[in-house]
Length: 363
Image (tube, rainbow, N blue to C red; front, side):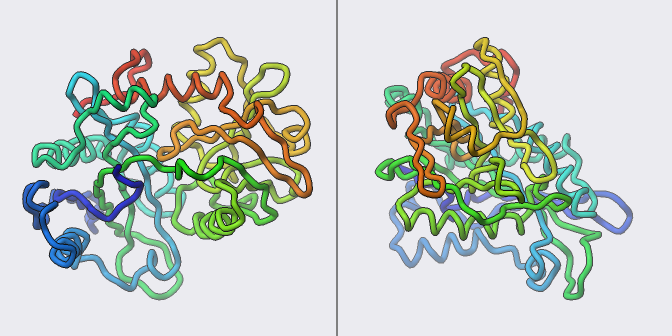
C-alpha cells in the first residue's frame, strides 16, 4: 500500500512567480525520470538520487521569510482514480479560493483561484500521461475505499530572499504531486485525548493554512501518539470549548440527533471536507449546527465523533479522554451516521456515488 505523504514526487512540477510588474509568470518543469516500472527496479541509492533531483528547486532561495519565520502557506487536495477509468480532482476550486485568502492574509499577493484550478488540473494530467498515477482497483470497494489510493497534490507559497522581519512581496507558488494511500495507521486504536496546549489564539492566524500554525499540532500529536492516542484535540484559549483536532476539523453527533461542529472564526481552519460533510449530512436530513461546542457537553451528550480532512476523509473517533474521564462513543465502534458520511464522501470521490453537487473536476 502507498503510504501518506511520501517524497516520491511525480516528474512534473509547477512554478509560478509574482513579478515586479504585477503579473504572475508560470511554467511547468519536467524533472528527471524513467518509467514507473524502471524506477521500481532501481537500487535504493539510485532511487534516492533520482527522487532527490525531483525534489530540488535550485532557483528557490534558502534564506527567506518562509524558511526563517514560517511566513508561507500551503494546500492539500487529491485527484482520485474513478470507477469509469478517468481521473478527477476533488473540489480544487475551494482549495484555490482558500489559498488565495491565505496568501492575502499573510500580506502577500494572492494567487488567483482560477489560475490555481487550471495549474493543478494540467499538472495532474501531465503526470498521469507519464503513468505516475494509481489505477482504480475494484478491491477498494470492499473496504469502502479505506485503502484506496490517490494523487496527493501539494501547492505551497515560498518567499523571495530575506532575513530581516518582513513580508513576502514577490512570492513563488510551487505545486508538486505524489501518490498516497491510507493516512491513519490501521493498527492504532482511534482514541483521542484533549490537550491543554493551544493551536491558535483569537486575533491570530488560525484561520489561515499557514506553515507556522502546524508546529504546535505536530508536537502535540506526536506526544499523543506516544501515549497511545491517534489524535489530540485542542480547546479554545479559555480551555472550555472544542476547536480542532491536531490535523483536522471535528464533529459530534449529540443525543438529540443534531450534528455539531465548532463554528468558524479566526481560530478554526475552514476545512473543505468539513464543508462537504455538513452538506452531505444536510442532504441526509440531519440537522447540523456550527456553534461553540463546550467540551463538557461533548463528554456528557455526544454519541458519535469523527474528524474530517483531506488526508483523513471522514474518520471516526472511538473515544475522547479529558482530564481523568473517557467518553466512549457507540461502544468504541464506528457510528451509523459517521459510516454513512464516510461511505458517501468516498463514493463521490471515487465515482461510485452520484456527484450531485459538482465537486469532482475531470482531468
